[in-house]
Length: 181
Image (cartoon, rainbow, N blue to C red; front, side):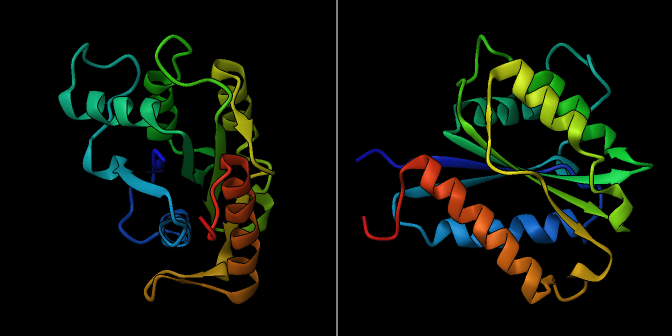
């Protein structure tokens, strides 16, 4: 059986962030599922220019190709000023191409914010992904806010880890993968 490829995309410009902590937890959970192969794209390492940017950018283009080849995507987006990080928007402008990527594939969106008032701040990201490639969004975005994450230790509070675990399990179910394979 062909492995299921899940691309984890971190859009956080910070080495330690709520969205990055949540993504690493999700990646760990997904790697434990037989038949799933996880790749990680870290935009912090790519220096994504504002769209459209240079026509050719080898590292960006490789990240876009990995994104479009994936069977599912888990994207972590920090919220700044009640909106997604600008590099997330720039990357998605390059990556969301219905001509090149797989349509109707599942997406899980994780957000990181300083406070709970940003709960709906990622609605625009959800709409963009749905509209551009007819994605299947697995639940609502999982928002990690305030002290939900210990950034220095790289851990999540138990209730948040449980909520994220439920979302990851739903993604696995959408993919038809399982621990008993």
